[in-house]
Length: 263
Image 1 (cartoon, rainbow, N blue to C red):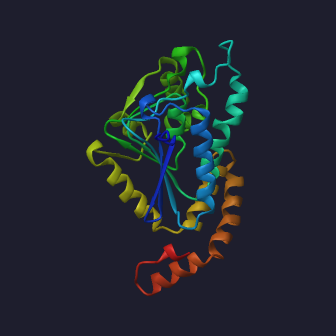
Image 2 (image 1 turned 90 degrees about the vertical axis):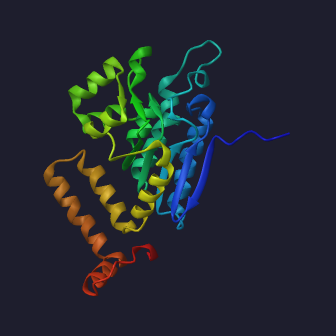
């Protein structure tokens, strides 16, 4: 008997770990098994010295169609949303945002509902020209969750975020790029290769400095200017004391490309 396909595919090449949501028959709608597997894989990547960049993408023609609602209903058809979010999406999003390695969300197709939240959570967001994003929650009289109320207004402003959420407007790749929801849009035909090339380029950058940069940005988004300035000063010392910095200085003096990958 052929075993069922795993809900999460994993492959590492040239220091880039690609995690592919693998429920293509459901447009990668998330169930508990998938969410737990993704969170666990990210935590493992944190400890894996062979991994310098993580890519999250979807198998098939969708990125993630959101929560598989049938997976969270009990026998009476009701749902404990609070408990579900606290056990699944909240740990996942927190892991992505605190991971000491860059996380790229590569949106190959539809990203809807909680899938839109996951799409927005990356340090870098790369879209296929066939990608779409929709905050679909209001169509079933729910509020955006899994971080969308935090990510989206910081990218497009509170009023525009409310409008997109209220009307559940579908955002195309072209509009997503204009709105600042993604950093690059690539052709669907070459998307996987383009994402891999981008991620490999990012993997050559100084990992410790990028981790501290991510930490500084996370802090600054919820702080005052004075607190952010002070935090920068503390983190800059940590960066300056690291061997990466010494390599960068030597490379500059020797007029060569720094070799950050060995640290």
